[in-house]
Image 1 (cartoon, rainbow, N blue to C red):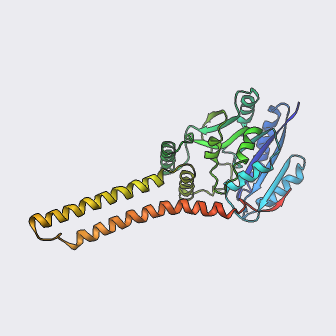
Image 2: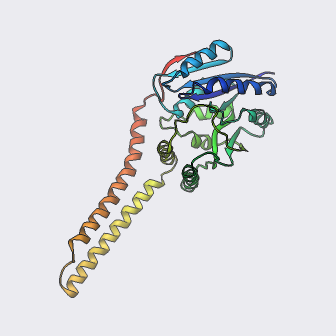
Image 3: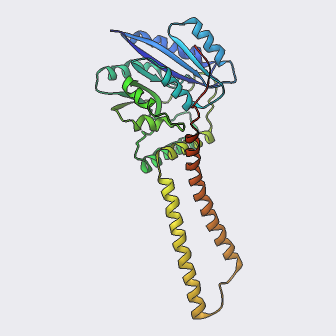
Length: 310
């Protein structure tokens, strides 16, 4: 019995990588017995000729290749969500178009799923060779931090590259939230997952659109989406500041009654005011981040807007 495997490929300014990716997966296809491939390329509002390359590829293989193009850049999370919605396969894979996710792992991943023991087979990099050291350091720190403050475990080095059953995909689609962090969602829905390890691979073409600051913002969004610890920290800091101020007032009054005089120096007072003001602004910023997420959710805007689909 032939089953369908849908491959979701988010693309942003990847005109050079698209034909290389398709050829690489097609080379692996004969190793997937009784499997029909379905490609879903999601153009995330690219500014280069990505859409043109997708149109050419779809005309070359109209039976298996499909694409959806956004009206503007909505981000990779929107691309993943769109791909999951469009996919019709019994199994669904998520892959990057730059071939940092090796297609050669697909037969092994499929074998684990078809054994019935697992619902998902994910991948994780065992090293970050080729990345700037500072990015690797902060990536490791992010995984350590989020696993300590969140009930949802996220495997260090885990990639979006994974193969899932239809049941797991349907569970993910039931989470229609606007603020999406797929690594957390994949873990939150549960299901038995096995991770395959592999060495980091370089991009085959083009340049990544991710830089340090975009990754930092993405990490903060992940923490806010899957942990309330920052809010708890803000509450504790506020409580400690209040207690410290009460102790300080008692100390000043006691010194005045016992020894006379007054609190010495305006500079120390200015430093205290700035310190307390900084703590207040920090706590307001944390609370504001959560309120902003709530604000975007209650607007109920679509995660993405399609301009073209085929």
